[in-house]
Length: 375
Ligand code: NAD
Ligand code: GLY
Image (cartoon, rainbow, N blue to C red):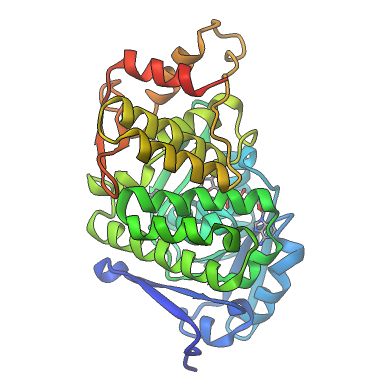
């Protein structure tokens, strides 16, 4: 059965691991989306308590024609549950149901469900096929694409995981209509990110269409998802395992991950932490003379207009740990970042509009930026 011409497709080109990202409204219930998946006796939908009542029945019905058994595991909701314990719930279900290595996993939800399902797929029986069905803006524009899978560790975000590509990514734009405004804003952080690192014309477009995006207008969302996926596809196609270029997709994430871990997972949404992290990384770029004040102010204004925080939090001292000052706390957390080398923090900075660079910066300057950006 052919796909409707209304379905936009972006391809991730990774030789034998290549796959399509399908983007349109109403894809969940479209049989043509699912009928080229590999034959198997069983499928497992992994979702959470918030998304299951909204969309699990629709996906279950669409998959019922393809798999003899369609099981569903419903996880607790939230970043605080992106843990070994929750991951084990997926393995319990797979083993308890007698699933085999042909079983296909479906990640139905936001980035938390997607990252955990991908990691489960990468490790169950040393690898089973999986499909990303992202239902948040953040997951449609970023986390479902590119094969990064992970869980958190109390000492660092996404520290345990694997690179493992899905068979396809199915972005049903209709699902975004039920997103709370705060989650939509969180997703906009990852959309905005693509402008300063790769495409200033896209940044202009985001500025012009921000009201439409915040109002969840389908045409604006469709363009934002497609262009974001195109940019991500191009980067991942050149550097799947982040040996170099792919690190630019982490613009705002070094400061952002410190905020998430330092505040306690789930206190700040990932997108909120990335939004504020982009402000801090931009101010650091400005302090290093890489961008001028006009560019930095423009980006800060856009992040604020997207409904995201632009003032960083003062991080609490770790329980039982020494009371370090705020900048020291950030620096300690950022040294655990995956980009750090021998304790040297490497930041994704803007090196002129539309161009990113990964480099270190003097601690004293980073401290100044943290002090200026946090209250
Ligand atoms: P999330 O998965 O926690 O989802 C946000 C909230 O929205 C949750 O409460 C969820 O239940 C709810 N929700 C999901 N879909 C909904 C819908 N259609 N309607 C109503 N509510 C809905 O958060 P997120 O922002 O999607 O993802 C953040 C996670 O993604 C973080 O853990 C982050 O580390 C990860 N991430 C991974 C990558 C990657 O490359 N793998 C990239 C960026 C972010
Ligand atoms: N979200 C960053 C990456 O996929 O590399």
